[in-house]
Length: 407
Image (cartoon, rainbow, N blue to C red; front, side, top):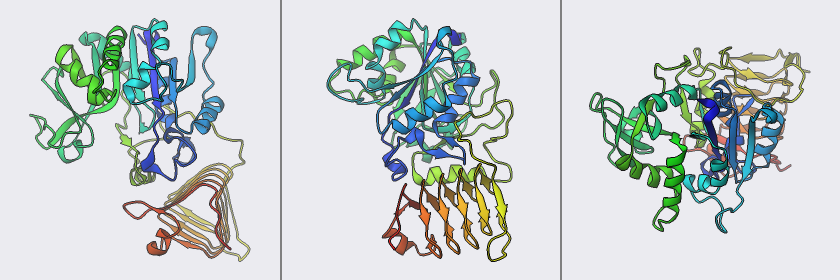
């Protein structure tokens, strides 16, 4: 069935709530977990699900993402009809960029229709999770569905941020409400609602028809959640597929996170440091592929003052050197240097960050290629930090890429 499926991976969003991490890169290209990019998790799911025809729809500040796809994901054989191809917005249907999720697919309808795919899988490139899409495709076929929507249960209060699904006992969807003020609870569990994860399987012929009809609706936002799905639920056979179900090769960690805000991004990274992480990066039968530079092994050495390096409950990538510093409950990407008696706590340091001697950082995200001066303190005086950097709603200090401290 996977051979009859074309996958669209939506990766063109601005990601404004992740600013300044998205000031020079698209949201799916934001580094994550000490080694990866956010998009790697969705692409790894495709790889392990047997999907080999993948179109990545890019738009906003896509150079970093395109480079990552080239360097880390040029793994399929075009001679066998396999590919992961970045498709930039090309104004195929008018003089405008992608105007919504449905419009992004419509503007590439030529690629969809000439693929001769029986099924179309539509994914988002900015979530952190593991999922066997082959099981969802099998469910779509077995149910005889026109559309299948991946869903999960969340508390009713959180459901307001999602598309809320109303389904019967057979998981046939009877209503779809996009970000309702009063989400419909589950009859079996009134404290929870069933919500869309933004992952869809369409029978390709129906998808083409629905997209063409939507383009003639001047009142449409050209969005799947707001426009396409509420109409199809009324007219066609639309089923829910519960994330973490029993079909297929279910992964043990049924974890899904939308990392669309600075706090959500920070917390998802910190989840990796829990004694039993809800997302197991060490699951050998479902590895997360990525591109990584040829850095030397991480190393800790005694500092010039004679202080011993200390690192506890942290993730260290290749090329990290801790020279008499202290690293606790933190994530360090490749080629980070921590100088003598510097202290890093509950922080994420991107590639190429250099922390000077005696500096102290806590509750920080430091983007690439930033030199923290000796003795600098960040995360201790939030009012002072607010005047220099971006602060998240929960007080995480974010230092932008290539930031230069005044002397």
